[in-house]
Image (tube, rainbow, N blue to C red; front, side):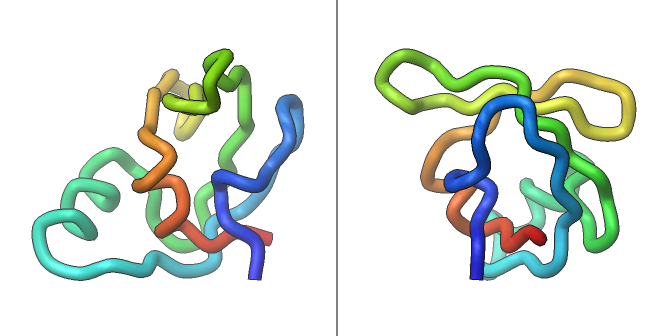
Length: 73
């Protein structure tokens, strides 16, 4: 299992599954990170938090903790 947090800068991956529950999972879904969505990792902050990605044509910054809940391939 590989998570969005482990993806290197410049790689494009596809969302396979979302972990977590309740409001946290709902927030991730609302950001557009749904199953089958392509995600391109643009940048990672110097200390690793947050991660900037491109999803569905827009840029999104996501925390490390939330990125760990997104399983990708």
